[in-house]
Figure (tube, helix red, strand yellow):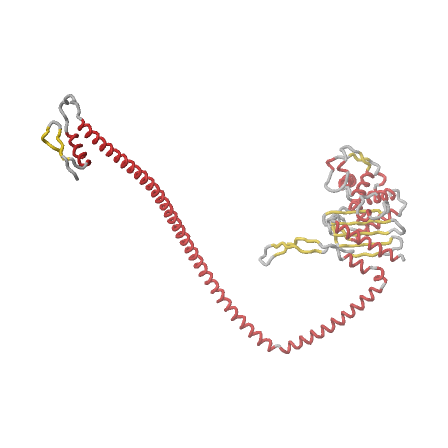
Length: 464
């Protein structure tokens, strides 16, 4: 380093060493800061040497300021960088904390699930233990039963050994019964062949009887007493009861099935009522009746549909009974004449009251009385014929030409009856079908029609 001496202003004898600018600046700056002049004298004209020195100081100061500014910027950049870095670190820390919390939650849930599984497994183990005890008890019971059965088997074996002679006798008896059964079957086969070759077989009576017994089955609920003494309802398939009668009214021969079977009478008593009043009250039947709706009763018929005050002759009421099975008209006739005349007629024919039940035999006797009246010269014969021929078209009357059937059709609870006298084409005949089927489904109607057709076919064979 080079040192030079300079003469300081105002003190020519002192000299200052020129040294490193940084040292000079550092020395002069404190001095300038510590000196506080009491009163500044008027500035003296600066010399050229001093001005250069001041410029040098300013340059150094400016350099120091620049350095400080740069340092400030560096510090600011470092602060921003550290702030951003701290934020990133905080967010990372927050994410890690959230992840740790999630892991803790999952771990707690897994612990709960494991605890629940443990409790469930423990419960199942307790249940299985109880079930095992039950099964062990059942096994012990079965072993006891097996022991008893084994003892019983041994006892039976011993008993059978003692009854071998009886077995031999029974086997011999069984063999004899089988031989007798075979002999009887041979007789049955021979009898069947004779029946098929007999007039009845050739006329189809056997097939007609089979048709009578093949009515469409129905399902009914049957109440029985169970083993515990309480009623038990079960469904059972029931074969309906069917009765059939065919009679040639000219030649006199007839076919019948089920004469004594009881059936619900339905409204068949009305026919007896009409006959009784025609026979005993003919002269009074021209009297009038004014319809009163209070006389209406439950049942079929058209009288109840007429306006109040409508006038009818008593013969008109009988016509309504015969044509429409009119329950209200029958009730009105009972109010006028009572029921005694009907009961007397039925009793004279050997028929019950017909208030609840009727047999095929009862129906045949009643229709024979109808035929007797139709064949008589009584004045009420024609009105009876006209009314019965005009009866509601159903059953057999719907299968034959109009006006050829004097007809009575009954459909009521437990009763489906179709009966009448057919006057054409050649020889009149009486045909009656009675069933306990209180419904007219297509199957039932078709069955009754086929039964009537077969009866007429078989009956016609007798005339050949």
